Image (cartoon, rainbow, N blue to C red; front, side, top):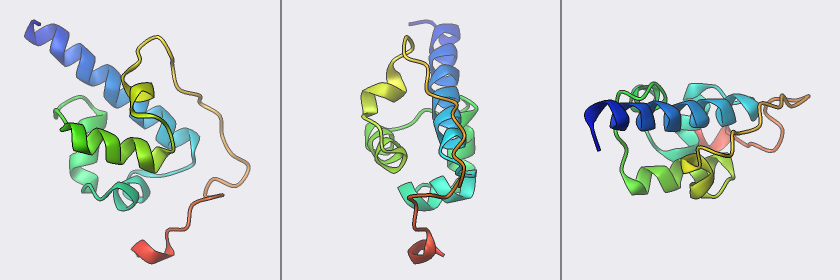
Length: 96
């Protein structure tokens, strides 16, 4: 795979993560707390500037409550729904 193709794949993956995160009403720091990845590293992943390990992919997917394959599937764009209460269903108090 060429560097350009690899960069495009990483950018697509990052975009799907960002869209799901926003659809769940989570900010970058909330998702970072939920998956145990620093906000700065998560930002680099979302912008396609950092490759991620499989273990990180699984942790992000679990935090977003989706199967890991959904993050990888280019044919299945994530929902951009906005929740009426953005933090509904997420208890972040244990992380703060």
